[in-house]
Image (cartoon, rainbow, N blue to C red; front, top):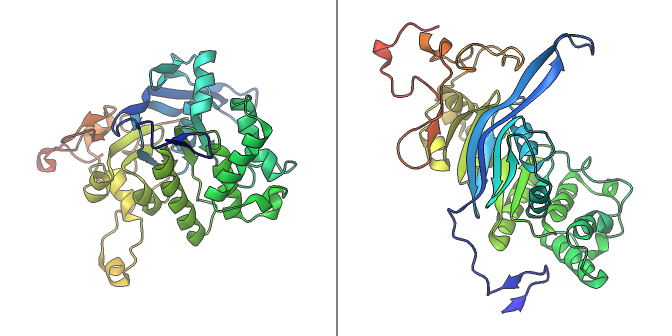
Length: 357
């Protein structure tokens, strides 16, 4: 048994079996009170950014979180880690409730901050321009592991920078001296240097070129295997999510539309919104791309301040029926495993269904 340069143990401790939940989110709601008219003195309205989201993340797996802009993906990610207040619901990290009925116990949050880290969307904006790269990557160790000596801290920082494709010669430089891809590597090093167990990646490749996106995704996959990490990967790009995720969660206006394994969601999507998202992904074969049918969404996404009755997606859904305006669809199990779909018409014989709304 030998100690790793990052302070772990190689060849000794057995990792928890894959399938054991490390993060459990139940009926999470995030609401904001905002002026309806756009002025501070305007009457307040409730913006339901996240509305009753439930899911698990298991040890060593990646859950992809997808949906259009404004559907609540980043708000959900920030609420889990404690950067956004929670209105209702619970978040459990392993055996500890970190959020219960909107309250965050201080001791539970201290443990969560050690075990869960975040990689942000804008790689340059997330790095302090006044600090060197050594100071940026060292800061989490000073906060979370104050007992480490200077030499051990320096060794961990250098080792982690090398793991993400940088080196000790970059330590004295500042963030503005690096490209976008290099800045994101620094952000990943900062998130991983404290040896967390879960990393929340909030659209970590959306601001990068396609070739750099592939490098960052491959880097995350390699680090996940090496460190037994769990990932919550937030993204717009469904091709990227398919590459890195074992399970996929599809959101629309704060609600979960579909949840299933990568093979289920991509191979046999059940919700009309999921099918529309997948239809928008271009195919590399020009002949196939020209002949295939696209499920085009019409209209704009409704305002979360003024949601339609019943299903929030019904105003844009090509398969909506009259009942979609009357009841909010609940997320129910479909088939085997953990697959869930929130659509009242899944499994309904449309020949006997009421008229389309």
